Amino acid sequence: MRTPSNRFRAAALHLGISMVIAACVFLSVRQLWYPGALYDSAGGRDLFLLIVTVDVVLGPLITLIVYRPGKPGLRFDMTTIAVLQLAALGYGLWSLSLSRPVYVVFVKDRFELTRASDIDSADLEKARGTPYQRLPWTGPGYIGVTFPKDPNEQFELMNSASAGKDIHTYTRYFAPYERTASAAAAKAQPLAALRRFNAGRDAEIAALPAKYGRPEAELAFLPLKTGKADVTVILAARDGAILGLERLTPWEYR
Image (cartoon, rainbow, N blue to C red; front, side, top):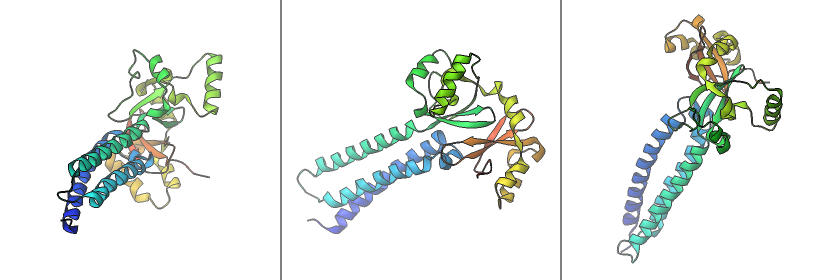
């Protein structure tokens, strides 16, 4: 007999299982691919919510419609729903992995966010034998770049940048951040500038010295362009060591 209680009980069980799976996936995505301020600013939350909302809602909804105890082929129907739901989740995670941040790159006077989809496979091949041959899966790494000295290469890079593919997407120019940390420190601004860019958020800025265990004079910052909502990279003023990311506006928008 097809009763509402049976259907709703089955749909509720399906929803509970889906939510547990979604929670496990969320923790992985949140902690590894989009840590800290990057979850909101780099679009991780929007993408994840879209994927999970569709996946978590769709499966239990179909179960609510088709479930009937004793129905011929019910096991096949439920198996098909589960397979389709897992396939949809897998495709969504694959899409999310393509846009995951892989590097936070210091370039001249700011940081740029490099996503997995920004780097061509040919560039990875050129990086053979270096730490940049494989893209990280456990969170973005902090690196710098070395600019080419050859005029022809400089011209090619300039043309590429005007077309939307700048130096922070070419692995052959990647370098350990330690090599560029002093340059980052030289370009960094004092926290006082953050107060100008973030009206009404003085309390958040005032809490940064306690958060990072340093007096304000020993802290500085540079902007990080994410392509969505720019955030602030907190540095040690003396040596440019990266201390963390904050959801603070790093410059004045005009």
